[in-house]
Length: 183
Image (cartoon, rainbow, N blue to C red):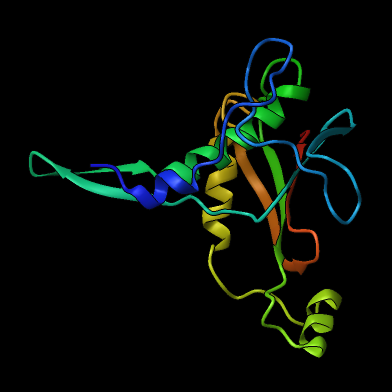
């Protein structure tokens, strides 16, 4: 039996089609702060930047027992977010996946809670107050690694260097920068 709450949280997949017929998992909302839509930018010959507006998600797994064995699977909102990230990368990145060592940096910009007072809100905007809530940085990194596997890189085991930041923002988004390390 499927979880009814998870079905309601799943985004609608109709409305927009790419020229090759794929449907993006989310409508491409405008980034409230900068006015840009979700984007992939090739910054130079070995750096790529992906911006996905909206509240960042971590990789969540559900577990069930089948025949006495535990089996893990991704829940519907996780699948939809991974598809949105993969679709954005597919839409703009042309060519073969990167090979060799890769550096990945990401910024998870979370929505400022409505319950914050004016002073706490200003502290959050200025970076003096940072989110210490879920999702954890490693779950966000797993989400990115698995979503871009086979598109940007061959396998997420190629990621050898990286850094991350979790901050509050008036425009929640996930910003990923990828750089191929040349030895």
